[in-house]
Length: 130
Length: 130
DNA sequence: TATAGGCTCTCCAGTAACTGGAAGGTCAAG
DNA sequence: CTTGACCTTCCAGTTACTGGAGAGCCTATA
Image (cartoon, helix red, strand yellow):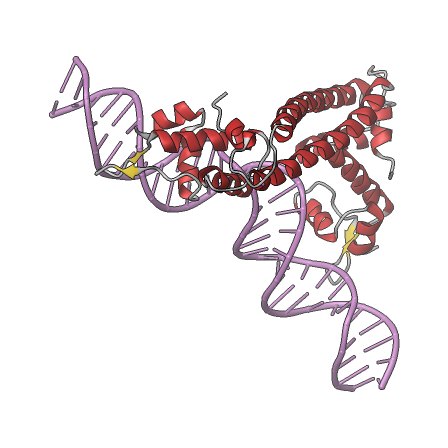
């Protein structure tokens, strides 16, 4: 199938699929005589895999790593678990930061009257060195 | 004061302070004869303000906007509150996404034995189209 | 006075992961 | 035979810096 159909099946923009081919992440199965990229079901499956992994916040480099494990049927599940666990910890870390951010900003927002007058606790809050 | 001192007081890398000057976000108060950027307390205060706002996840464009409100002593607090509230909603949205991500990935991780064998629910989980 | 070091300057390139657009080739339908 | 949708490559731009080269400046010490 041609790139647009592959992209649609994978749930990715055509540009992105082309980009993944360019950086050697997911190569098309073949090229047509006229130079069109030709994708098979296997390549589409890899594209889906990448899309999902990206949605989980794995970087392209990590995706490359995971894809290597994906295609390697002799890998140990421990290898995969290690990467996923690391990513899980990163997510948890990010959650904590976001929570802190949220609380602090929410505090500023609720303490601001939001009227016509210029005094604003948000502005003065941001101006604190901390 | 020279750039390194200003940067230290603001808690920012020198390169970043120079960058902020380049993009016209926080201009140095002056230039020495030999071309060195010269910062005063006011500029340092703005740098601190920017650092804090950036830490809250405000983009440079939003920082520019906020800085405009920061220096404008006649602004209404409503203007500021609107921007901050928008940002707060973005944070909350991000938190929801992250929570979903976390739960799904945690599920995959706990269902994976993580041993020498190749079967791995993480890999097969990522391969699901969803 | 020479020099060594630690600043500072500008400019260029690279990062991550695309996205948009231009210029041009291909293909099927009408 | 032409139209329009699709495909190609290549280049530039995005965000917010960061690193490095090459060169100028400033001060302290030998």
